[in-house]
Length: 57
Image 1 (cartoon, rainbow, N blue to C red):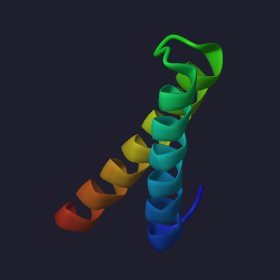
Image 2 (cartoon, rainbow, N blue to C red; image 1 turned 45 degrees about the horizontal axis):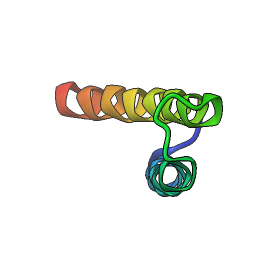
Image 3 (cartoon, rainbow, N blue to C red; image 1 turned 60 degrees about the horizontal axis):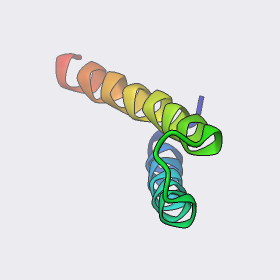
């Protein structure tokens, strides 16, 4: 997966993309909105895992 700064940049980019898409589609259950939301979840979880590893070790 992507490393620290790249990961945060990816998260920020996807958040922006998701916000724009929701405003455009005006539908939270649109397939494209859900797909980007799920991808964003994956990146956020990866970031949280890395933060936990840093704080533990």
